[in-house]
Image (cartoon, rainbow over all chains, first blue to last red; front, side):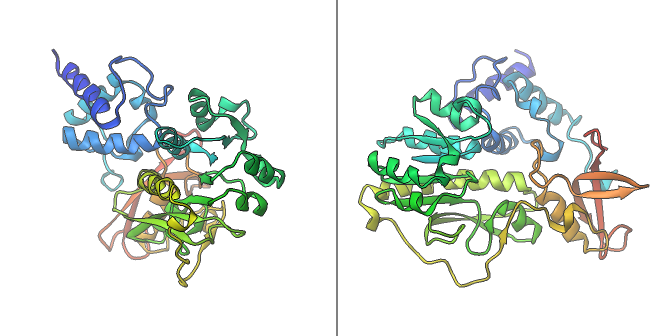
Length: 92
Length: 274
């Protein structure tokens, strides 16, 4: 299982344990189904940061990054690899 | 009955239908009709709750309907329709509003954003008895919240909703014991701020203000990745208006602000980040 596959598995588990939501379909639209709404997004981001030791600044996030488990895993992987988030304003 | 909008309203509905209580109707939406055109309406349809247009709360005739259905509680969660006093008085036990701010300090709209704008470090979410005024009734429940440096208008609003749900649960549990079992504490005598829809400073950044204040305004208006109710605070560069989406302050002595340095990222007319 590749790194993103492991991440996807952990994110599915997160949805189950933290949000009591079945997110086993990695391509299912979590925004359209209501599994992620504006309130849960904050809880999810804080939980992703805690579990995966990444920082996800809200002002650098795009809502589409949270549309599916697969995209969330890609976001976490990208961030962990240092390609996102973008530099803070004062550093530009 | 539940009068509700937004994700907070969906959460409240889920909480209510998950308990032993019966939801007589959900009042939501208005311009956006049919019933399932709003998130709360769609959630209500999923659990087979009747959906009525939220504007009915302005109509005193709704009071008779509520009495006819033996409604115990009216719960207002992020609906902006101002209920008629006859409607407020109709439920057997009372009408309650979930307000995302401490009262009386932050009444009205966008309380989380105003608190950040004013540089507050502490905030609260409140459930209060509704009366003839707006956000003026006695407090039933309140939960404190800490505002962190990282909080934006959006994150603080969401945290208020999360913290409001246990309060709502406490309210409906207490209501089983009758109206006397629901706490009722007069609002403090402190200063009362009431804000409407308007953004501060006419929606413009003031670069002569202290850096901290500039940054506080930017993050207060920041609802990324969702649209901001205030819009992004504007600034002008070479005669072109730009919306500033994020900023932070730094050590004093650099250009850009009254007592320090305020760096900013901006959003151009096309919405792209700069």
